[in-house]
Length: 111
Ligand SMILES: [Zn+2]
Image: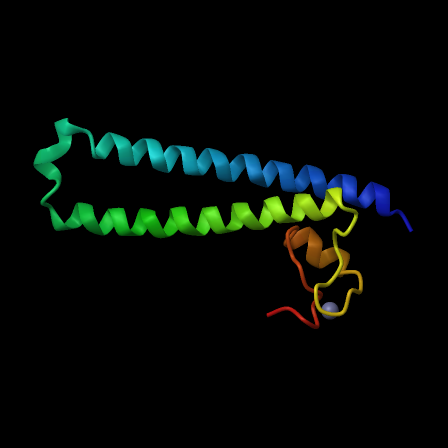
């Protein structure tokens, strides 16, 4: 077994995803602040803009949720519990972790 090497790769993958999500959230927030600036007040009554806000809110929530999962996965890595199924405590399939590095369940117990 080559667990050390695998967790090293997983950590790199997770950190890269984390950086990407944080950058995405930063962009969304910057855009939102720009739109809500007093200069743009004339636009605030437009329905289309509110729709866009909702859409961005959903994207933002999804990104935040994913970011939390990544942070939890990094915590599990530090604790040496990474890649174990939360239900049966067996190792999660490597190809599943490759596709979903913050997976907490094996294929059998995936929701
Ligand atoms: Zn399982």
